[in-house]
Length: 349
Ligand code: NAD
Ligand code: TYD
Image 1 (cartoon, rainbow, N blue to C red):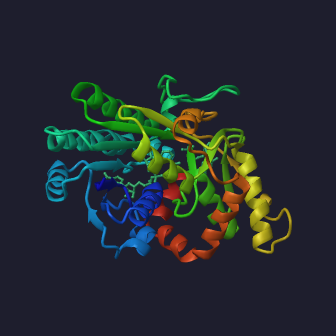
Image 2 (cartoon, rainbow, N blue to C red):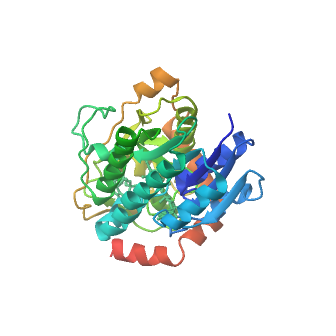
């Protein structure tokens, strides 16, 4: 079947990979990318796709209900792939209300508009909400998040994403709006904004700047290459069951300190530096407030029901990621100008 798809947040990290995949693989679909272009949104991320006939960009805010209604009216959307969000935990600690506005009100605005426009015929429509494993809270040494794990968000970011997930389910149960949710673990890869751990450390190693590790670096995250995430979204979008939730994860748990050491090792080799040189940049700094200890996803539902599994080993994915940053220093320079400097000074002073 054909689709007119609204992708929100398509100029961000995951959104740009998702938009690229859909624009490339589905020339018969019309794709509209709606993005506010916050500090995290960057049209350079999609430069290779901007002239494609099945792709349109609209600059706008998902909380602007008049705009959302207008583009629904104009484009007769049959699907929404909702990626737009405020996405960084540290920023949510500085400014929680920005997260409530975009992540909660923005999601509810999209749901309400989709309900109004689709209410006469829900068939062949889908509202796909892209969410995070952080809604499940923090694990101890054992266990994994499954789809039935109770929500226990502990940062303003994860609380706002949990709330948005609840609204999506509420629209399914109350109005029968056809929805799907996926909750994914930490992503990494090209176009990742360098406020997040991996690209921040790649950038700092490159410039021989301190590598700030919160606390003792013992916190564990489950890392997935971003292209594997968007492939999972593609599979779920086309074959997933309405009303269901799917966990997506890499089965790839790493302590922060070990990731940084691996990055240092690989970058010393690639940059022709002496072995051990970059590790000297490691600096233990004040821990994040309410820092979740461990995230780990059990993605067996997705594997068993829809046949998805990650394609890359972490060391290989990191190597590809580092190569991308080393070959795209201009991109890095552009996104670390201006607002980034101000954020960096405040966060790491
Ligand atoms: P990002 O911060 O890189 O990109 C977010 C995009 O949303 C940006 O382009 C930004 O301009 C846009 N945006 C922000 N507020 C907006 C608004 N009010 N209206 C319109 N556009 C707006 O985020 P990301 O890392 O690509 O994450 C995308 C989604 O995936 C988020 O919903 C996030 O919660 C989820 N997620 C992220 C990860 C991860 O590791 N990065 C993991 C799991 C789930
Ligand atoms: P981050 O990339 O912000 O993702 P999230 O908090 O959503 O998991 O952080 C990943 C891990 O790295 C997390 O445990 C916090 C830690 N971290 C640091 O130690 N130093 C840093 O400068 C940053 C940004 C994160």
